[in-house]
Image (tube, rainbow, N blue to C red):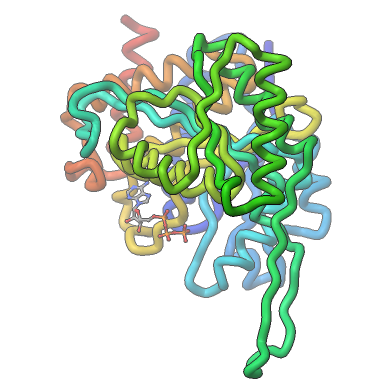
Length: 358
Ligand code: ATP
């Protein structure tokens, strides 16, 4: 019996609602699979927790999480706290301390979902965003607060090791999935220190270790236009933390929106737990109404299953999602329907049961 220890942090807003459906889906798999079980431990780390305890997680939060096989994360963000506090006290420490230097985001056309740009041609690429350094650093500071001379410095930290590792992860994926081309998102014509180094080691790793792969380098401003003009031409996109963040939301918009976009924060060496979360945030505008689309989070759960070595179960979940969308009878508001979060969860569960029961 393969049993996995999973830390569950539902967080705030719709994170709580979409997590509930994800756990229901995972429970159904456990019901049918005699050699698979999940030991879930729920952690209430959220804005509510901060208001009560003065911190987003306990002092030894990372120590607690370290022993788990994976972390399933909902969303964080609430008007009662500044966004940077919730992000830098919970998500960022997990991503950075656990060396989750790969942020993996698939961008794929789904049946029954209209893409504003695809012309009916299938979009199917993945983004490998560097997730542990780059533009999202705490290095810097401010001086002369409120005075005419006020100044701020924010440093971009890039390391040769960091660039090589994200490039290797992307290339490994490309080799495993029969992809031929790596698209490099850069801006080395203007950002001449960090981005030039980024280009140098990215190209070197591909040339020396993956000569079968082709590298296409695009300046980020041109690349966003190409995302719109020819999204079908991409296979594996590699980007720094900031560029990758922006490209992922654009990618998500290309194939139906945030309610359908999963992500994985991966430590490929499996030295630390990896974390699986929807691309979307806590969506305060629809929180508490029971109308959020749970697909992005359920699909993130499928990415977790794949990471745990159960690609067969991941496939069951993504097939069920595609079947529900293809039929088009159950749709949440973000994709043009009236179904509730729970109704969408139930529809996916029904499809999984059908797979087992025939
Ligand atoms: P945060 O600051 O936590 O990131 P946000 O509201 O600024 O939250 P998102 O939560 O990413 O940003 O979402 C932006 C908008 O997209 C939301 O206001 C919501 O209307 C819509 N949205 C996001 N996720 C979903 C979802 N799962 N289902 C339906 N609509 C969604």
